Length: 234
Length: 288
Image 1 (cartoon, rainbow over the protein chains, first blue to last red):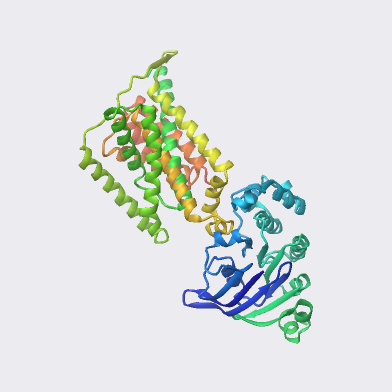
Image 2: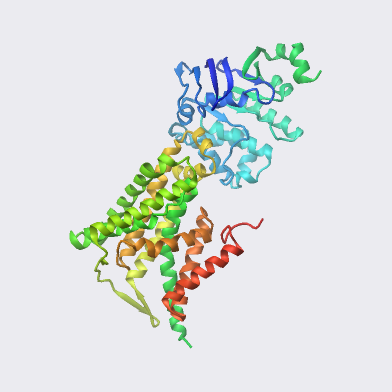
């Protein structure tokens, strides 16, 4: 469904990703794990079009999307839940969800999608008139996921969904993602919380200083000596 | 002692003036809120629209309402033009450059109007009735602009809260990249914002020419007042600007009757300066 070939990207003179290739099949949940500064966020930003790659190809369902603007890539069915959630803090929960359905193709299914999101996350239905910025971190993550679903995506890119949350909330957020996954969405998630994310996904890539270092089934990767020592601390 | 009836009349006149001022301030504030740029030449666009109405009505014999509608369209076009030709190329440069560029536009438009149409005051002659209610004199030339301004403000409110593009306009001002991730081209949202802000200038032009004559320096008459209202209300704060419009217009109207017209403006500016010390973030700013 999503394929990256030899992607090199960065900001100004700084190169954050070197020759990265990866693929996500339809219905799959894939994680990219790695330490802070490995280039995980850049990877998602390149896929969703927030930055253009310097080299390499990105195909989504066979269509070349590398270098297309973000508003064009989302129309292909790629929803990006960015780092720090990036909600519209001054807008209500309902308006944030409405903006999730901004695409004309999503707008016609607005009611249906909204019902789906409210069934998945009933808290959002209760809070529809509350300003997004005044909600707790966990609720905001819920809203960010809901907003992504409103665009009727084929794949959801999640950037550090557990970042900045209290340990209890981290578990809950992974639970939310599991729920979204059970709805049948294809997911590509980048995380520092390796232990939790490996329980959630089918496959994982290990990214270090901008290069893919390892790839494998999630359970196998968790067994690797290297990963256990470096990330799981056991 | 002043007859209380004059004070009541002044207060009503203040409200009537406040409506049009609110229209001007909201148009300018909308653009500032979304693009983070103050169009210094905003009221000079209004001036151009007023000339357009003058020519369409007084010279080409269009009915005033048709000229007004045309002015709305012209305002929208001017708004888009200003965005594409002046703002867009320097959107990411330092704010001072954008200020200087729209300031340059102000001088250009003033000189352009002087060159083409001289400094003569041009007036649209309308025979509109006046009403007398309980001894208070209410000219239709003030009531119609007020009513239409309020209708336009309500329409703007509904546009910004009920429609997708209106909500996107509010959203893009909070997070441009996130709005792009929702599938909205930020540049298109900016163009729509500029068109709406411009159309409001066009409408304001139509409502102002009913009561005032137009000349190349019309912008100097209403421009500073409009900025003051925006700053007093809190730049980008629509509700604040709406309230501030009426505060300012009341001070001007009542001060004008109690002392003199000039002193009304002096008091308004003094109040503004004092308020900038007391509440620099605007009247509705939350206290830190």
